[in-house]
Length: 117
Image 1 (cartoon, helix red, strand yellow):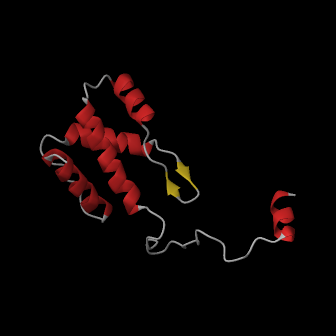
Image 2 (tube, helix red, strand yellow; image 1 turned 180 degrees about the horizontal axis):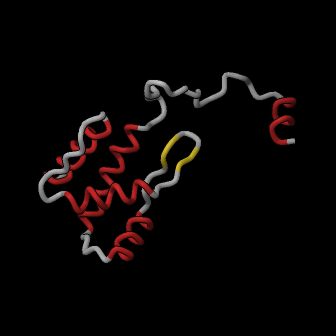
Image 3 (tube, rainbow, N blue to C red; image 1 turned 60 degrees about the vertical axis):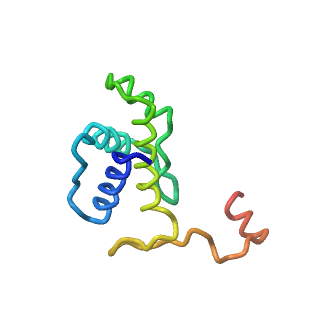
């Protein structure tokens, strides 16, 4: 992990914890690219999906950004920090209802029929 990657990941952790966003000097283009990619990400029932290489590649082409492979790795590392923050098992933010990720009810034939007809 290079210095810029460590600094950007640390800044993202601070931001997700409620701090003011402070990308390191020279990291603003990658910070902006990550924020734009993250804003367009899809979600599933338990939280955010990772940003795919395909989405990064399309973004780079559409915005005509001269990003190198190590820049893509930095964006993916930032995405790992983001996903870790929203990982299942984390405490729900204040005011949000936490839904269990697994049912405590055993699957019975009647429940199966009720769910899938």
